[in-house]
Image (cartoon, rainbow, N blue to C red):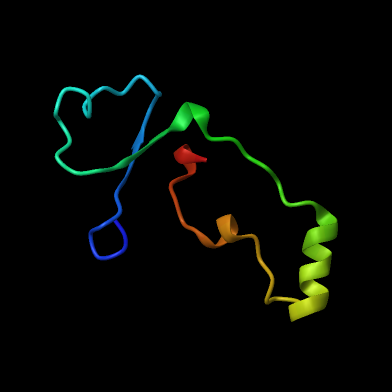
Length: 73
């Protein structure tokens, strides 16, 4: 939930989630199926350019700053 309760993201296992079609969700939500998420690693040249721009220790990939259980990796 973000933006003062105006935006909702629901993470589901697959794109076959049907709760919204059956009236199970009463608000507008964005459904994010885990099997459709793709990873795009940041190229080393981009990381190097960021470090040159803001200094070492100030440029990190956003995902490295988020904590989550190891099983979700």
